[in-house]
Image (cartoon, rainbow, N blue to C red; front, side):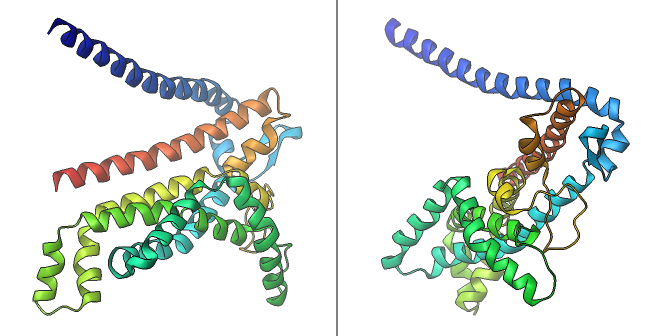
Length: 291
């Protein structure tokens, strides 16, 4: 008995240390970012830094508003492309997919989640960029193919595994009585799914979308390879943009002094965006638990 009690206390201590290590890691990241980023914002000026439209490190001009807008536009495009496809795919897998093809389809969606970002980037560079270039020329919009539209399509593909997996799980978690009751009242198969089951899984679906947004807004390597990386206000979907993550990665290797601090401050802005997304997920989970 004593040995068992000692083992339980030991394991409890191990779990507590692991939990504290996770919290400590997050705390250290927060301290590093805010300790180095906030002073840089104050030197530059919070207004100039967040709303300035020029990014010229050689002239000590640091305005990240074009990168903020670029990140939001690219993420919005990824949502417009990826969310409908992801939700409809999850509905198909949960309610329509024949058993013969379910496992291959499930494996394919899971494989999408395991593909490295650089491979997505190569695919975008070799396939999507020439395709978008030809479309832009046929529409007389110009551009070289490395554009906001290309990045949005690529990110829309990258967020599919997250949205499909979580949405399917949310749909399968809805009690079968919901569907059966809708059909018993005269609803068709499609109407029962889209007017009863899908709304009942709303919390899980929205959480999937929010996590997909987090993946899209934090993606770096693939976006660098296809977005054009031009630090200016977006001029159209066929023109290049630079996102917050791309701005940090591209210039951090040679930055120093105020330039380096401004890049860390850019990381603070991105970190705040991610915190807001996580806060939204926590609220959704809390509401789901109350339900």
